[in-house]
Picture 1 (cartoon, rainbow, N blue to C red):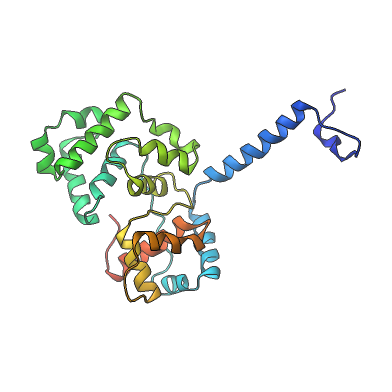
Picture 2 (cartoon, one colour):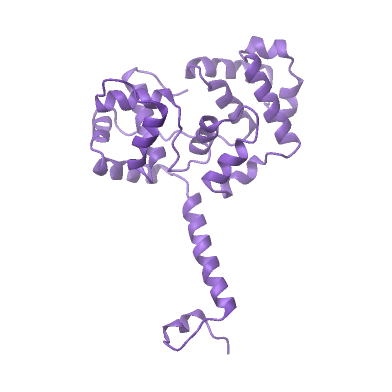
Length: 245
């Protein structure tokens, strides 16, 4: 009769190699599942309550502006193009350019994007640099260097490394995709100026923290750094009576 793992309560029992390997696999898969677990609206509210207990400053955001919306974006090429457009410009400016792109290139696919000329892309709102980034992304998807469909099964670090292989996708762009599309709970978009400004205002700091300083401050919010970022964006936009596009 097969001797199962449940027999391990016997002090004289020694697990077989197969059983040991099975235990290692179970532990590994449990870790992976936990690592890939995405936020849901319910988990977001639970995480916010946990953050408030550890950092009462977040309670001020909820008291003044209620819970943040459950922002999310669709996976795929078009969303990454949108995030590239958002690099170092206002959300409103990027959104306007993205709407023009959708009007001229619908549906927005890598193949159709590559057919647009440099002049057309400039008229839409692409800088020369962002044009090269968009084309590099389109080529990476078409030649299967980048498989966006497989990202939701990978760890945050693995997704980050995969995305950053593409020209023009840096840490901030990759982290925004992980946070908004994959909805991971513990990603911090390093270099986001809105977050740095929100931290300064919420904490009453005399000057805006640097990118590195903000990232160091975010460490106390683990394992909910992405939730903290959502709260801070909500605070930043609400104070300015702006809406996330």
